[in-house]
Structures are given as structure tokens and as C-alpha cells.
Length: 365
Image (tube, rainbow, N blue to C red):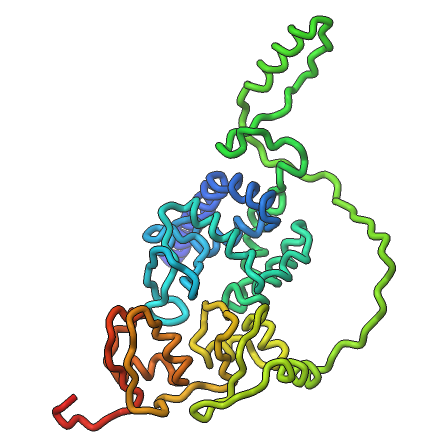
């Protein structure tokens, strides 16, 4: 009886894996040419694009993908002006971008990676998918410590490294925008004496649609540099990095917590590196999981307080809860708890009083 149950369990698991594999294969077939086009246009490896989409969206079956057409788990951030969808991720009720369709999500992902925080990713050649996977994690794309190995496993399991830019190998024709690709003619047509006949036969062959195929690279791309070797410079120690950073970012203090002000080009990843602290700790100090750093933002070097320096503040329409939290150096959760706020509220629509300290209930409030 136990043997039968074991075999039944194995069969159920194998059927589940087969169903997942088929879902992944169908998703790859549907979106591989979009990934290839984005590699040609933006320089992001098609293998990385497909692996991120598969992982973040569960092959298009996740809640975010189904309800918000968000296939890359991109959160709202300060500069997002489009539709939003609230979803529990690192924190409860986080704000994610919502798109009209999945194609918009792929396009926004390509634009999202053009931000300064991901600039160092483009120092890596597209063929080095492992380097790209680890660099994306270092730049703070995801908080999962196993994010890079997961991307690499998907790429290798489904041979996504064989997806290459058709523009690079010269077979990306004018129909590519519609994902209509044509194979090269199997047989060579003998040169016709009559140029009119030759042109007619060439046109007929170019219009024959055949099954689209993924192009495999047969030879590695070699780049020869003639530049002289740069002079070796001794790398800075962790203390020197920290001192250099604080020299350009003078420390200030508010509500008993030290902070620095972000400048152009700063990201949570490179600030954490230069201060020799964990990026996640720095983000948690600033309620900034999934949020980009903007010039002028305060970066608190320790946890914010649970109470403010004043009893209350008056909000104004359009003010964000995060911005208020940073200005008053009070944790978002503390403000929500003190005022009984709905955790999904991120921006205030009306002018209202918000308490920053606990007050006695005297029947007036």
C-alpha cells in the first residue's frame, strides 16, 4: 500500500513539473522575440529579460501578471505616474506598477534598467548572463539573496543563452515588429540572365513564411583593444571609502538620528558599499524596500524614531506618506499606528492632522 502511495505521489509531482515546464515553454515561445528586440534596442541580454519575466511572473500566471499585467515585479517608485496595484511583497500592501497589457510591461522593464543605478550592468557583455544576473542583484533589483542563482538556473534549464539579437546576425527583416521571421532559402537559385526573372524569383522566396527558429551562435565574439594598460591604482580601504563618501556627503542629525543627503548618481547599493553597511539595512532604515534613491532624499544611517519632534503636522494634498516620514524622521509604521491609517494609503488626498506623538485621549481628539 505504501509503495502504491509513493508511486502515486511521484506521478503527481512529475505531472506537476511537466505542466510547469509546458507553461514555461509556451511563455518563452510567446515573448522570446520581444526579448530579442529589446536586446537589439537597449543592450539588455534577451536571456536575462526572459529569465526575469519567467521568475517574476511565474510564466505569466502570478497575481501581479494576471491582475496588473506586471511581468517584472516593478514597484511604483516616486516617479511613476501611471495606474497602480497594491500587493503584499516585502511589506504589506506595497505599490506596484499596473499596465494596460503585458507588452507595456516588457517595454517599461527595458526603460527601467536604463536608470543610473543599473549603469554598471551594461559594462558586462550580453553573452555573460551570469555576470548580468549577479550585477542586477548587487544593484538592488531584488531582495532575494538567491535571485541571481535562480535566474541562472532558468537560463540554463531552458537554454535561454541561445537567444541572440537577430539584428546582430543579419536576419532581422522589416517584419520583425510583427514577430514574422523568415528562414533563408534552402537551395540557392542559379543566377538568371534576365534580371527581371531573377528579381521576381527573389521576391517570391522572400515572401515564403517558414517556421521561425532561434538562431544559435557558433563562434564567440572577440573584441581586440589596442589601448595601453591603465596604471594600477591601489584600491581604497573600507575606512577610506567611508571617509571619502562622508567628505562629499556631510553628516547631519535630526530627531537624534544621523543622515546624509543623496546627490546625483547615488543609489542605495553604492551608498551602502561606500559606508560598508548592508544595503537591506540601509533601505529598512529609510522605509525604502523597492524604492529608488533620488537626489535630495535624506538617507538615515540608523533606524528612524517611533515619535517625532512635534506633537502633530498638517498634511497637504498630494504629499506622500514616505516623504513625510523622511522629513519628520518617524517610521511609516509608527505614523500609521498613531493615526489609525489604512496601510494602503501612500498619498494624502486632503489636508489632515497627523499625530507624531501619542496623546492622552481626553475626549477632544
